[in-house]
Length: 308
Image 1 (cartoon, rainbow, N blue to C red):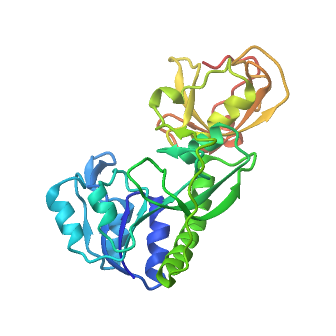
Image 2 (spheres, helix red, strand yellow):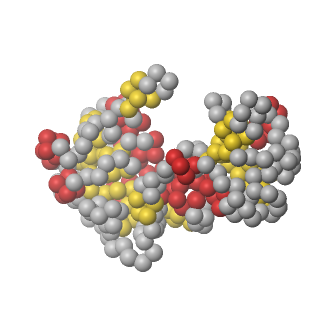
Image 3 (cartoon, rainbow, N blue to C red):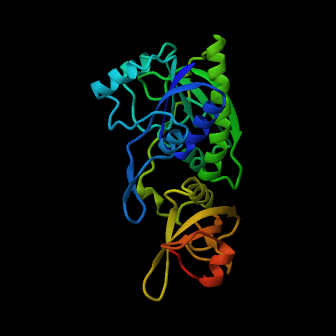
């Protein structure tokens, strides 16, 4: 099969790697344009662009796939299929319909639950016990196409969006390659999505990241894990020269009571509106992430401290 691959972040690299290893012909890889990164804000290629160029795959980084010139160039590739994994743009109908077999997306949820931009984070934040990866035929509607393949994954009590992301990337890559082989043999079967249980995974907004200790402890725990490692749920720690911002990157719920935001022991057990959360991994602003024990050796937070 002759393919085009659309993807941008690290999550998509696992799929492109497996596609190359499986022997499919990748005529072109598409990725978001290089963006400013690091302290110097130098333009840096996306993980997918860097990997594709390392494999000798031609790469295009269009500002918009709706540009008529890009649509024409894509149509001229003579493709059997297009594969999309976290590309970051909505593809127009002309692009979806140009390949002989169509375009297929690897999505990080069990559709129709969590259609949209942030399915991994939203699943953790909602307290879902299971999630999964699915290969879906792309249509003009948002994640509404029929499902070709699915793999379920459990969400553990210490899973973060980051740990789940990594498991999904590898599981999804294998599922995608199996599906492409089935398409090549003419054996793939499609199942329409039900309209029951539709939910939307809205993009994570910066204002969501501040921890509200007055919320129930189980909700705070899920928020911390769902926003880890990025953007990172945060709170303010009182200090001599003013409050400092600290990200909470891993936590666990515990049955304990106190005033919301009050530290209940010397090991970062923090009271919430109901119950409490034990902070297990944190990151002070401008510093590296640390296990709570290491953080406390340099920055004691005694019982009775009130977090903002």
